[in-house]
Length: 480
Image 1: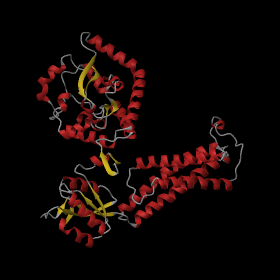
Image 2: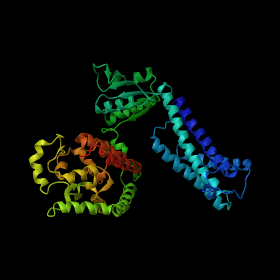
Image 3: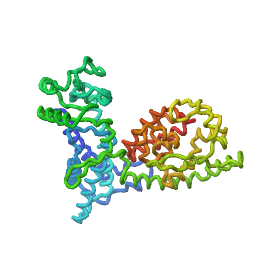
Image 4: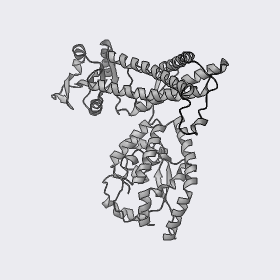
């Protein structure tokens, strides 16, 4: 444990207590003393003169008690760990729920003690101000900590073990993080190379214990493609004997551990490695949100869909209005993906003649000036209006608003085995790949984005993708 870890943890604890108190006090003075400061007569209705008054000395006593309860909840929830490495969005989410839990305990006390707080408005405003101050306080503290790392204070010295693809990925990611300093690399076997990605090679595995004795290493990171259970056990024991923290990476960096749940089986510890975080209640919640949003969207956009359908029918009365494309959905199930027809009626037959002109050069077919697309179809694709019928696919639980692109059956048949993991969840009208390039992406790039979404799903990520999708559609970026 480094002194900086203790310092950063204590700084968070003290700053949180101060910001919660500040939020409560600001609410008190706003309600008790500054209520006449308003803009126009409208706000006067919301902030009338208080009917009950509490002295600042008495209120400070209550504010200290409320702050203590919230801080206790934060401590119990582990918000002051010595090594806080979570994303800022996740940190704020934890703060929000911890604050909510602490305030709920306070309200429960008021209820069971049959004690009425002198002002519900002060309590409500204090809660909002406390959350705002907490967020800004944590943001400022993160920036201070970042500057400390950049100046070299508090950085952890890392010894990386490995020389293959996993080590390459780990080293490149470590180099982008200012809180880490790679002290050196140990290879599995003796190597003539002196450096790996600019990091000095200190030797091979037999020199591990000597290096731990001679160098001031903070953590050992095992990132070997050739690791075995026996080897890992030996390295862990040696690292712990010399009081070094030990971390290791599985064969596929971050994939398995991105969605792992722990449990027991008849008293035995067991880890379940999931292909995606989108499971259990997360899947249920996403499905409910998709279903009701689809109903609302259909109700609002039905006039637009009727107009588009009428135009397509008037141009070619004998041709179908809706194009049904056989796609592969969740768990490999086939379904008809619905779109407004944007191509000539015999587009699928003509596609076979155009395969030699595929501009992407990979599994996915794409032509910049596809002769099969009608003039009105170009407009529909540019504006993404052609995808509105997929709202009915969502109602049928075949698709989602956000997810991987629904690929054709013949395309999926050519997928490398590992890439078929994208079929673990429902495909989406938009997705992480669509907001990062759409039709300009290669197959490998698209799969990389889809895998990231698979491993890092959250409702917050869905919301970000949804908002960015609107911007991509409005600007027409990378549309075809």
